[in-house]
Image (tube, rainbow, N blue to C red):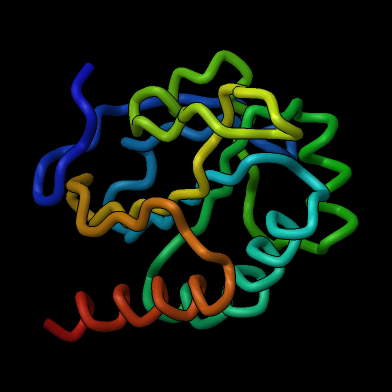
Amino acid sequence: MSIPTIGQPVADFTLPATSGKTVQLSGLNGHYLVLYFYPKDSTPGCTQEGQDFRDLYPDFQGLGAEILGVSRDSLKSHENFKCKQEFPFELLSDADESLCRQFDVIKLKNMYGKQVQGIERSTFLIDPAGNLAAEWRKVSVKGHAAEVLEKVRSLKTA
């Protein structure tokens, strides 16, 4: 499976999600999809990023865009995180890293002096036809959700 590139179709995927749902990419055609990968539930940066997307969710919805968060955490962890933070969007559990590998977001990271495999904070925007419209890698949380919203807005008015 090749890594998605801008303007090319994103390979279909199916993953378990919060709220007892299963999400399939092809089931979301016709809408913009913000797919954001984050390292771990309930950690400071991941919580802030989720809160920023939560706070802008009505604006994304107004543009016909859906948001999905993805990490390797379990559905139980996701449910707790989603409930505590009142996220209006679903979180996908990618326990086997299949989607993470499809988007090439598993990277070697330094944690407490050790090299570990982890998710590099990244966001991908998929257009209504299922093509990759934009990507952000090595994301810095501050201002990121607003930047993604502006990109959706610019594509909608283009």
